[in-house]
Length: 508
Image (tube, rainbow, N blue to C red; front, side):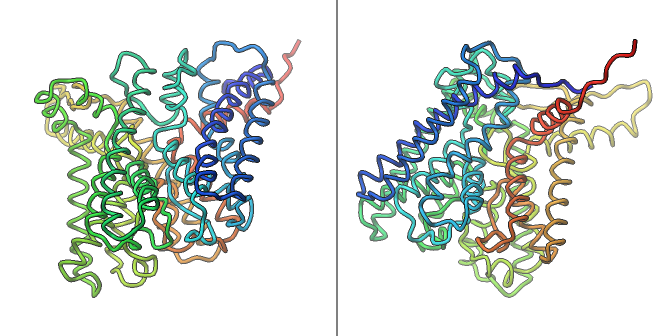
């Protein structure tokens, strides 16, 4: 029987959900300050309204339960699931007021895309979006990449059930003494990376002739978009706008860094360098990610060479390699236009981009997709089963793998990895079928469905302001469930459905 949520549970969930909404309202002061700094007075009013709405909604939610209580695990999981939608709803308010979105649904879609670090955009004129609005979009991606709950935990909120929040947000490992310190490490490490990346890209932007103020913002935004594998861009041409190979190289390094498990960085940070690097190299997740990226790149290059586009060395090195790294890390930055990808690339190269997005990066990172760790575990399990075929019945083979220490491969672990992988594949197929039913061709519909569910953000052209509302809603849900990795979402969904079902009266 599914556990039910009682009326008091709903009050507790609303109370703590309101705390996160209030936190989001406080973070909204960042774009508000930028609007004042840049003299964008009309935009300032939009963010004053946004802060007011966040304070009102957060306050009303907090009033659903006046006195705080100790959270139970199921309540924590429900809060984690709902915050991505409630937070996106609040975040969409100033975006909708900007006048650059055709409807509130489009602004909500942008908020969900930002929070889930996907990178899809329905902005009608992104080239003329205000500095403050762009700052808010990239702030959302930074929050989403690190995890909204991680930010709250690092500030000391919800520490009593921190592990429930942490795992419900798609993260499974922490290596520091407690969950609060682990969350603080993620926040601090990411801040250092963003600072260094911003400095490098600021210097590159200056060399490109961009004025100093814009160079600071462009450097910051590009760093956040790359490291948080988010893919938002401040220009409609994405990274093609800059025509700079040093900028693209720095972006690729940041994308690859963002696709690595935060827990591995923590091990490197606190452990001895030599022993930790050895452990890092032996990690099944790092090996799987490196092997998969190289294989994907080789197959992609071979497929490109079979066509008539990007056959020169410069095109392959700059555009081909960047595209496959962007897809593998689920970032979504583009140096090829949508038209070039869909019409000039060979079908094999286009298909390889889809597969690269479907697998994704590491667990516990900012990347989406099935994750390299699960692929590595499944591959290990398959090899173990093949070995068992030739082994005598009296011999029991055991298989181990290296990931934050040595672990034994169990049927339970393999089953969990297979379950998540199957749910991803089923969602990819369902989204593609909906797109086909609406009238789109099968290949772009599949591409867009995989990009949405894996939080990749690359587009085959379906995601646009003029897209049907049903497709926007489908992709919105796919981004949401893909970020939560299904089990959290499904558990909350079934529990709420069970709560709505009337209880049967016991027979006398």
